[in-house]
Length: 291
Image (cartoon, rainbow, N blue to C red; front, side, top):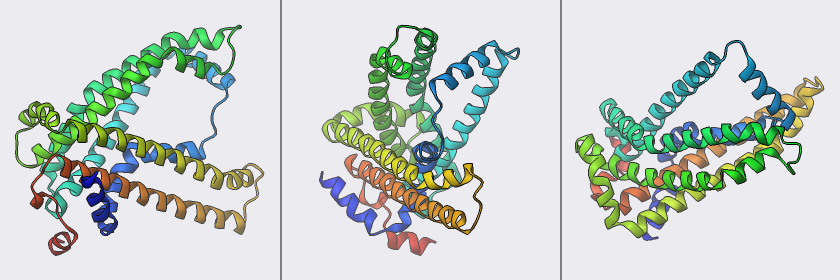
C-alpha cells in the first residue's frame, strides 16, 4: 500500500508519464472501451447467421486462417507499441530501440501461457456454441449459457492472466537492467515469491482497476455516442452533429489520458514493490533534462 500511495503521488505530479502510459493502455485494453461504447452489439440471430455463414462458406477453412493471420498481425503490432510505452515508463528518456525489443520479447514469452489458455477457452466456446445457439430448450441468452458452461475455464484463464502479469513485470525490470532475457524469465518466479503478498495484491488490484476503468469508460462513451448514432441513422448531418463529434473525441482523449495515468501508476508501483534501486525510477526533472 505504501508503494501504491507513493506511486500515485509521483504519477499525479508528472503528467509526462501519462503519454507513454496512454500508448500502452490504448493498444492493450483501452480500445475495448471505445469499441464497446460505439459498436452496436450483435443480436443472437446475427451471431447465429454469421457463424453458420462462416463455417459453410466455400472458403472454409482458409477464411479462418486469414482471420487468425489478421488478428496475429494486429496482436504483434499491439505488443510492440505497448512495449515501447512500458519501456519509456521504466527507463524514461534513456529508453532505446534495443530495450523496446527486449521488452517485446519478454511480453511474448510471458504471454504464451495466457495465449494457450485463451486458445483452450476459444476451442471450448466453439465446441458448445453450436449446441447452445441451436437448442430449442435453452432459456436466456445463449452467450450467457456458454459462459456458465465455460466458467471453470474462465476462472483458470483469469488466474493465468494474473500470474503472467506478475511474471512479466518482474522479468521486464531485470531485462531492462541488463540481465539476459532467459535468465530474467527464469529468476522472476523466485523473485515474486519473496514479494508474494504485495505482488498478488498489486496483480489482482491492478486488473480490477483496469476492468473498472474499461467498464466506466465504455458506459460513458455509450451515453455520448447515442445521440450521434441517432443522427447518423436518420441522416441528420449538420453543425449539431459536428459539435457532438468534437465533444465525443475530446472526452475520449481525456479517457485515454486517464487510462495512461492508471497504467503508469501500475508500472511504477510494480517497480517499487519489486525493490528496484531508486535510480531506476526516473523523475520528471531528469527526463526533462534528458529531453
